[in-house]
Amino acid sequence: MKKILFALGLAAVMAVPGYAQAQAREVTFTTQLSNYGGDGAYLVLYLTDADGQYQETLWISGEKSKYYKHLRDWARGSGMNQAEYDGLTGASVSSGRTLNVTLELDDALIDSGYQVRVDTAVEDMRDNRSDVVVPLTTEGSGKSVAGRGYVQSFVYNLK
Amino acid sequence: MNIKPIVIIFSLLLMSGSALADDDCDDPVAGWQPRENLRQKLEAEGWKVFRIKVDDGCYEVKGRDPEDHRVEAEYSPATFELREMEREDDDDDDHDDDRHGKSRNDNASTNEDPVSPKGIVKGRPTVTVE
Image: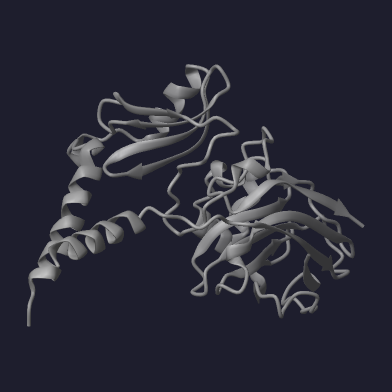
């Protein structure tokens, strides 16, 4: 009996640092901007958990980090820490254009309550926190949603 | 009710906890230096710092050392004394314990970009504007 309990305890202890092998999945995020008529938009794609808590930056369009504070929810969640977005930035997106971002995401994030969010900002125009909020699910793949601010439509496609 | 098995299992868990906690730093918080200082110190030594976080009372740094090896190192927050240095070879199994269970798959990508501090995104995204 004691031996069984010992084995059980040992198994419980050993199970703690065990990790499932994660698989990557290719996802394309397509963000079409409306013809808002201003300068190029700064926008950020990022992941939050179901409660809206920031998890990770996927992409930032807009090269001057001094303006990143206008991507308000993201700025608060990420602390605008450079390590959060290093290597994940590019040019801002002009009015009416479409941004396609393709990346490999951990499969475990899909259908697990994670959300994709987009914050947008344009110089001398208003900032839009959570312009887009969509859950990252298999079902939601390919379904276009409208944004609240400069984003006319947003869709992600899982491969 | 026989509580013996529960006691045994809990004591085992506690024992393993204390065994794992050997590398903890115990600098009093009042004496901690800002992590930005550590970043500057390491960058001055030729490091490329991806991230510094607090783990078990230590500053845990992820980045590339001056020889361009991917490393994970722990420093005392008060003295910046090196406690532990782990070199992560690109083709090694990744023992990085991501607390959210989002373990990353370094085998899949050997790219050199310092992207993805938490390992959710793999490699650099492909981006186009139409």
